[in-house]
Length: 145
Image 1 (cartoon, rainbow, N blue to C red):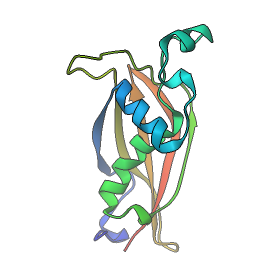
Image 2: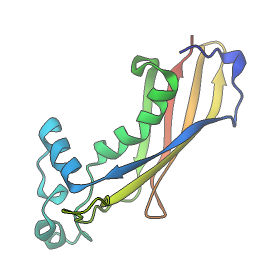
Image 3: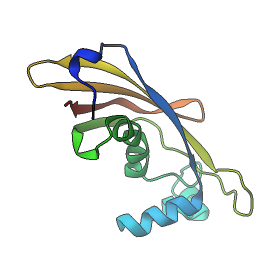
């Protein structure tokens, strides 16, 4: 990262991104993570346990959100802490055979706090899908150069 603490200010935007999510993405994530819970790929199972449908993995959603911060920082190792609370699941509809995503995750970030002594910036993220916040208090701490 080439930004110094002196170039940043609380409230400053770091950017935004839209993450398109398909059920294929969830199956790939299941393979990578080892989390094969059928609520993440099987509609009948998900609705059978009283979910509205297939939902994205929580860690997939977190990773999609923090990617904005790692891209901004220019180095994933600069993110020294990331915390959040899950508030709503990301419902991913079946769009197999189309070019449409089954869901989108909208992520935006801004500088929440600067710590000159630790040379860090806290980035506060807003994470929304289908018009609802899916993560609350999503905050990443980034070590600055």
